[in-house]
Image 1 (cartoon, rainbow, N blue to C red):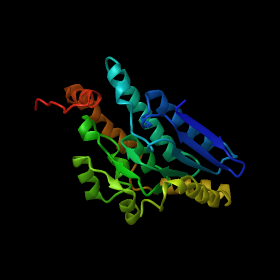
Image 2: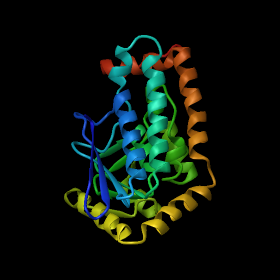
Image 3: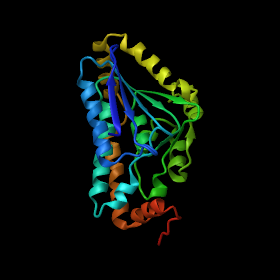
Image 4: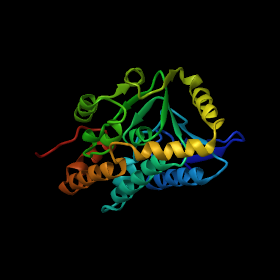
Length: 253
């Protein structure tokens, strides 16, 4: 399974993404991730969750190769619904979620991290949305929670990433550490939260979600509608084929 979970005796739980080579997740992986956060949030023994990954980078979005192997719209719809479920589960997890990011954080990874409560990152971490180059849209809702508005727009149009140092300067990344220290840094913050009253912390999570100025679930669902339109137009399929075949996309417009 690409998703592992573990609950420690101090109330800290870990959710680990491990799906080599790049931690892109198939449709089933997104739903497994959602189920993990829903289940852990309901567990009274869990006080905080750390989301991290193993391998070359944190997360590279959806499994485009799976999508291109599937005829019709089944995989596209599955990926849309799976990503929506996973992002929502992170946001609505009943306890705080700490994302520990190393290497690349792309596409769906932005959706996960942007909905987390706290982010720590390794000094080699980069954050980006290559969706326009893949003929898709989505997760700008979550990127807007990480970077300033005009930076977010530039990143969407150009597909250029931002560094952990930049996000730290903007206040969205709490700490930047060497990659070898990332898990320990995330667990250190988690244990500090776990030591507090879980009743109060769970109430704080609910209250903070309640005062958010943007409904992230509705906003992301709106973005997904444009992704489906692009797919119907054919431009998205050409972009994904080009990615799988490692060539430049050939657009007719």
